[in-house]
Every structure is written in structure tokens, then in C-alpha cells.
Length: 423
Image 1 (cartoon, rainbow, N blue to C red):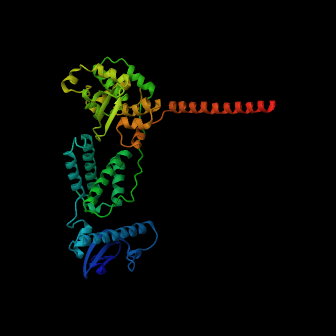
Image 2: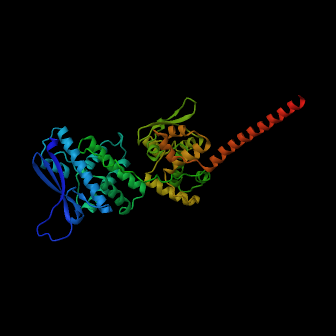
Image 3: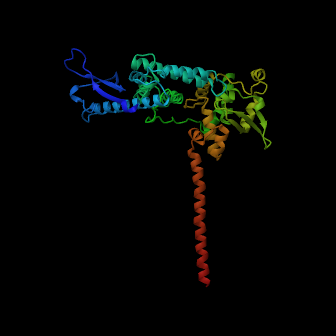
């Protein structure tokens, strides 16, 4: 069958044509039957090599057009091979329809995305969290608006998503939506998930992300220094809601719990460990990864303070946690009262635990990773930053060791000299 299969790129002159650019067309010939389709590109006739079916010259426009034609050629051949492999009916028109995204196996991008979100929503509490669903819904909204802005169309075939589509979407998120690089990267990753899902289902045969590389770098993780932590911990707060929020924030600075995990924490998850001390035995809501954390005195004191709190009694929870939005709002008030210039967020407690409380005090990163419930130390490295004070301590230890080695050398040389003197 492949011996009777041929592809041709050519320029098509419309009626009453006098001058100007001409549209580039694709002609598919299969078993003597032809089918044609416009590629949506145009070129001056003088810049076209009809024998090669390519643009002439080495200018950027010519190189871009030729690269696109090469991409179309490869894609059509892959579709042709796939149709043969799955025993689909094969004609020139059907092959062209598959390429145009109108074939029997064609699926629409937003339709796939919507199905994914609906399935994910049904799994809340079983591998998916509410916040994760929110970000996927936000991602779908951005993608829908991009299609309308770029193509003036409500949806697009998954087969039309190519490298240029991804690149343009990335630019749209950064420039039109003014997303920070890390947020734009997250939305592009959601698109990549739809592509991989489509490949797994056989709806597409090529991964357009193959040559795409993200340029986004993780934003620096902010944490409290020892002095700032002490300021918040020891601040006298007259307003009850601010005191509650401060205490729960400090509790997380000494345990490393994320908001979702401290919110659901129950008294039954506080148990005596093998060392006879109190530990938290729980699991991450985000990943369901179990974690075990020995409780420091500051954390135990906060638990004792709220043991008889009405909300804790009624809901069988360990601490009276407000909504994340209210917690972050009240933390900004606390930062102002303490004279801290940093934008205080609840998640900063987790970074503070990883950096100021543990790593900077000599706790190995493997131990910190285990307590944070991370599956990989690489994740912990994003949270944890080694402070200058820790570097100073480590270098002081090294200096003492080197000084001792030098002193030992001097003593050894002196001993040798004395022996030689008496011999």
C-alpha cells in the first residue's frame, strides 16, 4: 500500500489571480486517488521551487516554512503508518481528514481536558485535593481563552497541537495573562498531561513536547530567620484571632506541617514513639505519603494550650485552624505588628521548619525529607536553604580540624628533631 502513497506540496492559483502571494497546498495521492488540503501558509511564487516542493533560499521565512513542511510530511507518514497498524480503512480523503483533525479517531483538546477535570473531581480525597482541582480548572480557563484569542475558535483538535502551539501558549500566559514564569510553566505542564493522556489512548502518535524545554526556574523559597521566628513567637497579642493564628503558624514552624495537614490533624494522631516521647503519626493529604514527626517542646505547649478549645472538642481536631485565606490575611497583620518586612504566608512555616529549625541545626537532609513526607530529597532541596550561620559553623569546625592537623605536624617534626639530636 505504501508504494502507491505520495505527498506533494504545491502553490494553488485562485481564479482571477494577478500578483501577490499564493497559498501552499498539500496533495495526498493514495492508490491513484487524490485529496487536497490548504496548509494555511502563503509565499511569493518567485520564492517557491516547484520541483522540490519547498521554499527557495536561506532567509528565516524560507527556513521556517520548509521546517513546517518537513513537520507536515513526517506527521502524515506517521498517521498513514498508524492507520495501517490499526487496520483502519485507508483512502486519500480519510488520511487527509485524520491530518486535519476531522477523522474517526480525532478528539478535541478542551473536550479531553474537561473529561480529565471531571474524573479528577470525582477522586477528591482519593489522590486529588480540592486545590489541585482548582488549578486544573484555572488551566482549562486559560487554554479556552488562548484558543479564542489566537484562533478565534472554541476548541481545536488534539492533533493540531504542535511545538508552535505550545510555544505560543507559553508566551500568551506570560505576556497576555501576566503569569509569573513558574505559574506559566505549571499551566503548560497541565497541557502536557493532556498530550500524554492522548498518546496513551492512541488519539495522537507524536509528542509535540519532545523538543520543548521549560525556561522557568523555581522562585526562591522564603523562610523566617531565627530572630524573626523569635519575634513572632514571643510577641504579646491582645486580639484572640491573631493569637490563635500565630500559635498554629508557630506549631507548623516546629513540625513542618502544610496547611491541609494541620487542618485535618486529630488528637488520635499524636502518639508515644519508641523513644517514649510524643510524635505525630499521619499522612500528607496531597500525596497520601505517611510521615512521623517527633514533637518539640514548643509544639507540645501549643497542643496543651488548645486541648479544651470548643472547636477542637466539637470537631475532634487538634487545633482550631481557620481557612487558608483568613490565616494568610491575619499573618500579614502579625508581620506588621512584629515589624517583619517579609510577606508572611502560612506555607512559610514549612520552609522555616526545613531551613531554620532543622537543617541549620545539623539535622541531616534525609531526616528532614522523611519528616516533611517527601518522596524525593530533590523536593526537600527546593524547600531547604542553608543559612550563612550554618556555613559559618561548619567552616569553623573545618578550621579547627585543619589547625589541629597543622599542630600535629609541628609536634611530629619537633619530636623527630629531638631524636636526631640525641642520636
